[in-house]
Image (spheres, helix red, strand yellow):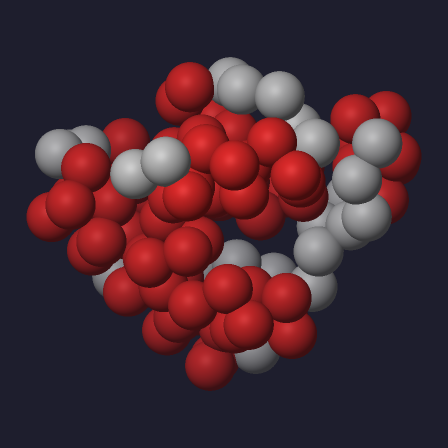
Length: 97
């Protein structure tokens, strides 16, 4: 599966599962899901971008801690819904589901 991210194979396989979850649970096409995963990874591992929106940058440990379902929700929340980047706002939104 694509996209291969600039990280290790375990993380790439993890994001393959996130892509599948975005397709099955949220109705995105395969190409949309791949694009969103790549965009999320590029933005949220970039310290400058994260500093601008007031959150810490993310790394592989963070991704695995969130799990496949949690990352799919984060990607949907931040990139599709374009909601408030505050981590507490995301948690509040996720809790409302």
